[in-house]
Every structure is written in C-alpha cells, then in structure tokens.
Image (cartoon, rainbow, N blue to C red):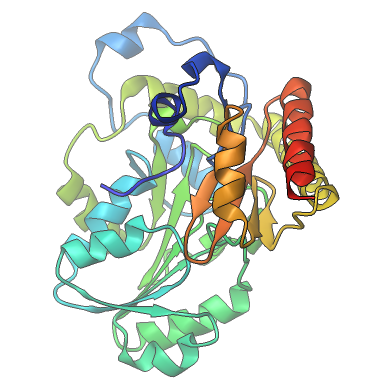
Length: 330
C-alpha cells in the first residue's frame, strides 16, 4: 500500500513522541467541520437505505442531475480501472499517487504527462486523468481547457476523469455543471472540505450508464448509515458551508504568509494546504517531526506540504518551530 499523510502512530513510534503530543499538518483535511446533527439510534440499528435523501442532497449541492455515493473517492479510484478494458491512460503529474497505482494494478498502460504535454499526447489516450486543484501543487486548470480535452477524448469514446477532492473552496471552477456529459467523470470528496475524512464518503458525478456500472461493481451498502445521516444535513446547510469556505480561504492565506515570513514561500497551494518545493524538504520534515509536528514529505520533486493548524495554539507552535528551523539554517 502507498503511504499517505495522517500516519500519526507511525510517526509517534519513529520519533518517540507520545501520540497525544503531535500536531498533524500532513493532510489537506479541514481542521474543523460543519455542525454534526444528533444521530438517532435507529440509524445505527438499521442497514443503510440507498433510497434515503443522500443522493438528492448531493445532487443539489453539486448542481447535477444525480450523484453516486461511494465510500470515499478512493473507492471510485480503485474501481474505475476495472470498468475499462486494456486502455492507454494519461495522468497529469505530479499528483495523488493512488490514481496511477490503481490503473497499473489492472494492467493498463500509463503515461505521465505535464499539463503542457497533454495536447500532443491526447490522441493516443483512452483516458486522461487530472486532479483539479492538483494535489500537491494546488494548480487549478481552467475549465475551458479541461472541456476542450474532454471533447477530443469523447470523440473516440474516451474518458476525462477529474478528481476534484479539493474543489469545494472554489466551486465556480468545478466541471460538475457539465455532468453528465458522456465520457466526463468528476470525483468529489466529502471528507476534506467538510472535515469528515473519517466518515469515508465521496461522490461520483458521471453519465447514467457509467454510474450504474460502477454501482453494480461496488455492491450494496457502500456508505454506512451514520455517515449518510450526517452528510444529508451538512450538504443542505448552505450557511455553514459559506462560513467554512470563508474560514478556509482566510486560513490558507494566513498559512502562505507564515511560510513566506520564514523563508519558505509556497510554490503552490489552495485554501486547504500549501506546498513548498525546497532542497531542504527532508531536513525540514525531520526537524518539525522531532518537535511533534507532522507535515507531508515528497521526494519528487523535493517538497513539503503543510495543512492548516487547528487553533491559535497550533498556529503559535508552528510559527515557533519554523523560526527555530530558520535559526538552525543561519
């Protein structure tokens, strides 16, 4: 299995720091979520019911005719390669590694591309996969460019898959309004913006035929009852969503400013994380970890991704740690 952020227990063991003393900035998950409604006992006692109001709530939130709930967008990432026969897959890199891993596992041919290289390669592809905003770079590809690529793929029954896990803070840039165009697949994550990663919920926005095929492959009860109950309420809480969006934009800008003050101007990012390419990435990662601060290390290119601190004490702790690192480099 690939490594991901959030592996606090492993970090605690490696650095000999008790679990409770860590500050986890290694994920792009909102540190605070929307209000969680009470969960009736019956929701725990009964099997999940697919004809509850979750699909309707998600469709309204994303502005689409229908949305398929899945156990986190990871479930769709692993299942989609099983639907196509041997295919040529282009992936705009660097990006979330699970996509390439899933397509390789099913025997498909992969081609890693830069954004600039897509137009030259697209005629050779059956599927093009883009993360937008990108993880970890934060790069947001304009909708017009993505739709142009989709049109060229759709002419040959190809797919454009757009992973929009970090799109909720910039909803006007989403391709959701263009679903369900044939050959357009949009993946959305519930966990990151709503701060509910542990609930394991995501949505696939696609045409009816592809959605039905994916649903049959995944089988029944893919999303548990308590998660469905909470998500219905949060997907309909428009006021809380706007407060969350405003808060995350402010926090993202604050993080970018803090990093810049300490000699680490972000190379890219979005409201949920900031990404710094630096030759000191591994040293910085270990320095912060030795103080109980976990950030996400990348080797290609050498870089570190910072998530958002949860409260003022956490912001102060990060500020002091970055200052100490800067002093150690002087």
